[in-house]
Amino acid sequence: MTPFTSFRPLVKTGFLWWLLVVSLLLISLLFWAFSGGQQVPWLLLIGVCTIFILASTLGYFLYQGQMNRLQQQLQQLQELGDATSELLALPAKCESESSFLNAFLSKAVALVEGAEMGSVIVIQGPDRKLHFAAAYGQELKQLQQLNMLLPQTFQYRLTGGRCDRVIIINDTDNTDDQIARQLFGGQLIRATLSSPIYVEGKLYGLLNLDSTEPDCFNDYDSTVIDILSKEAANAVALYQKSQQIHQLSCYDQLTGLANRSYFDQQASQWPLRQQLQSYLILLDIDELKRINEEQGHDHGDEVLRQLANILRQKWPAKALMCRLNGDKFAILSYGEHTQLSEWLQQIRNDYAMQQPGINFSCATVPFNGNVAESIDLAARVIDKHRQ
Ligand SMILES: Nc1nc2c(ncn2[C@@H]2O[C@H](COP(=O)(O)OP(=O)(O)OP(=O)(O)O)[C@@H](O)[C@H]2O)c(=O)[nH]1
Image (tube, rainbow, N blue to C red):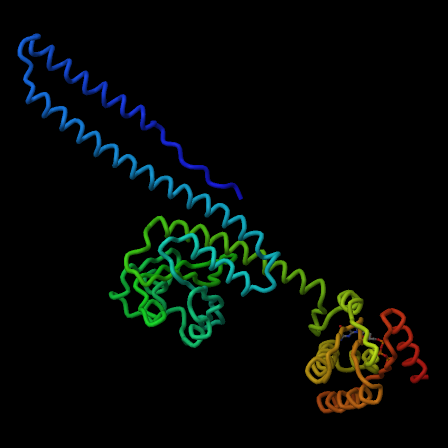
């Protein structure tokens, strides 16, 4: 981040003083010249000089005020530039979408001078329900109790349902909007700003900034938040893409369980315990080929999905699970051998209730850190049982 170097005005103050002195001398010279070197009208000269000095001083202060405002805006612009580049780096650092939204919200509150608090609302489902995903200076749980739909927001109403621009309400006394008038620590929100966030052309959510003081947001804040919301949208899209890539590369699309390579990766970090043996359990659905042929591939898919669901929902201990390939699943779990057998029997019973007549073969072998070895051993045990 480059530190902001103080704004250098075009004209130095010393030069302005010289300009004033020279102008006064010129005025005096003109008076002297017009009086033809005779009696100089001193009173008139002093009056003119005084007016000139007052006008110059006023001009100077107006100029300074403008320079200060410009300096402030430049500083804000630089902060905005820093914030936007930080935003794009955030998805890689944040563990979840909600932690990203919280970080984004903090930046927005810090950038807009009048903002004391704020929230990020994500629009959910076809009925466009409002879900408060992040809050700053307000109780998130309390906000999440507000049961509202998008059409009830002032953003929606004041844009005629288009939600296409930043909306500022600088005095909430003039609105009956529930969100706009929330209580904050016993105080009423008096000014509020709402910006839509579009991710890949679809309304993703709203960024709201609030203050207990009226008239504290201006057009400049609106521009800053508009830019920031667009950058946040890019960052959200980036985050969602990276999640999709993770999902596609690590999980089996049919069952939602981990795939073999992600399972291998996680199993390599599985903590082996001295007091409690770890076991690898291999499950292989019987005669899936025949099921596919007789009842169709879709039914075969359902058979696979249901076993995965039962394993995920019913396995009673901490475990890693995956669909190894085709009709084979693996579980890495702690437990006593007899206990694991009981759990497997329970899974078998539950599965038989959902898929009558369909069974699976399984083998439980000790796991000592080498996944491939344990899987080979378990596969040999299953083959032996089937012969
Ligand atoms: N429906 C469906 N079938 C699959 C999928 N992946 C693999 N299969 C089928 O699963 C069958 C597995 O064949 P085999 O390894 O001989 O297993 P099996 O027919 O269950 O025979 P056993 O395991 O010896 O009882 C093959 O016919 C594959 O086409 C899938 O994603 N969906």
